[in-house]
Length: 163
Image (cartoon, rainbow, N blue to C red; front, side):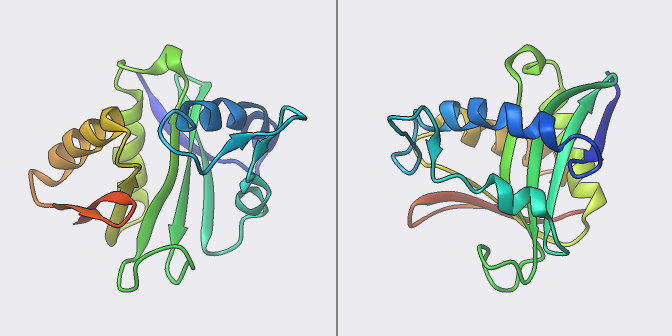
């Protein structure tokens, strides 16, 4: 399967806006940070900040064989929500169910790490064991085991340098 990355602001922002609630729904199983209001909208909603972009925020759409399959939001130093001394933080990552377990997430992760070279941090909600296992496997393969993995206050963190 051919995996590509597209900038969300270039014609795919509406797609991301429509899919983003699915991501928040999935994530809400593991954290109380997001909640569904009486109006049926998720709060908090940081999507507008990501789609507005800027030099420190990269909203990307994962494209598999020509079809939008997910999205990834990457923060770039000195992005406010990352550890000082790191170059990039994978802030959000989502693959639609029909594309999971088909190599799309792995391929997208490799493409993202190759696109943005430097010191990375990837974090997961500690209760999201599936995400933790996925990132340990993918980052382990990408780095050939050359990464650190630690439990920090409120998040599981992998740190590595992209090749």
